[in-house]
Amino acid sequence: MRYHKIPDETVRRLPIYLRGLMFSAEKGNEHISSQSLAASVGVHSWQIRKDFSYFGDFGTPGVGYNIGKLAREIQKILRLDVIKRAALVGVGDLGSALLAYPGFGAYGLDIVAAFDIDPQKIGRTISGVEIEDVSGIDSLVQRSIFLAIVAVPRQVAQQTVDRLVAAGIKGVLNFAPCKVEAPKRVKVITLDIAMELARLPYYMPVS
Amino acid sequence: MRYHKIPDETVRRLPIYLRGLMFSAEKGNEHISSQSLAASVGVHSWQIRKDFSYFGDFGTPGVGYNIGKLAREIQKILRLDVIKRAALVGVGDLGSALLAYPGFGAYGLDIVAAFDIDPQKIGRTISGVEIEDVSGIDSLVQRSIFLAIVAVPRQVAQQTVDRLVAAGIKGVLNFAPCKVEAPKRVKVITLDIAMELARLPYYMPVS
Image 1 (cartoon, rainbow over the protein chains, first blue to last red):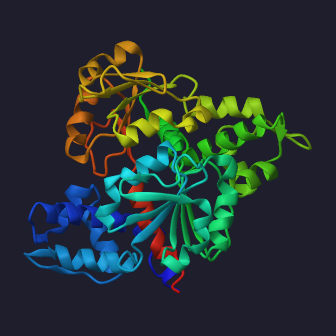
Image 2 (cartoon, rainbow over the protein chains, first blue to last red):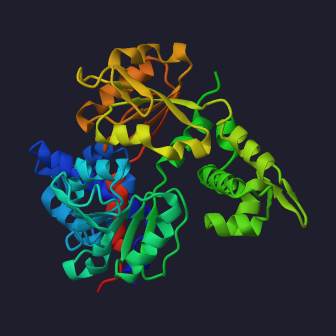
Image 3 (cartoon, each protein chain N blue to C red):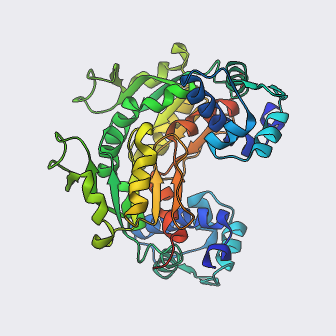
């Protein structure tokens, strides 16, 4: 039911707020007004207040939001307090970059396992993670890893997702530029990097 | 005005259709039905027909869509027929992966220039692109490059975008996990890879 409680668009903005709160905390702030948060994340303050109203407002008039309290609450709603560990499948150029990517930390996420089929890569360590044979996927759940990032070639994306689903994975972030099928019990988000670039020219002024 | 002609959600789906058409053409198909296209891209066929209705339907009853004709039309609408060349700023792990990324080709896009501040990197060639000193940004427009991909650390993302704007760039795909400001005449899309992963746990079943 949680699924339907908060609008998807609000769920989509919660990580933006969380990121903004983390960066503000980095600067040593303990409180932030909805106006400052709005300015830092680029969302209208009325939208922020509306989004927060779905799970209770944490602001104190004149003081603003307690950054730590609000961040923990958002992490709890997004379940980032319990789901922190992710596995990577496919350690090519993009996969290696994802292993080295510092941005996951802002959300408390960590790639703790990586898999590939290339014997040349298996056993090597990238950004502190040792690359394992892809057969290790089958024991992910025993290792309490329920989240997977797929960065394999398009041609093998579906079979990779099928294997992750069979292994009991519950969420997949798919970087392969194609649609992948999964049962309803598994949430799949496909992120086609090139597609975002392909949207840009439409909005560019004609010179 | 073009800006307002087609709904953003339709513009967002056009690259998905284009990608599906390209893959179908790869398989040697010349025509595709809205049902087959729907199945291959994971969008309802009624949605596809509705989206295409904004710029005229190209289907022939019983035959389906002419893949080449439809693909060219979508490229024209997205202006991918004129905007094909992009520059990359920041050749770190992610930037290098983007240079090597094959996915841009499906949209006719090509990263033809790359910039970094690291003397160790300048002059090196990655995936056929020689890394130039960041000062080269200022001459991008003279080289008919109006689209830029920013893959620099968050702390220098805004100044990088400012320089690109000053150089006359019209579209920016920003991978730095922060909001960047740009004048209305420049379209900026920020893609925070980690944020997509951070949305996943909310939708994962509670075990």
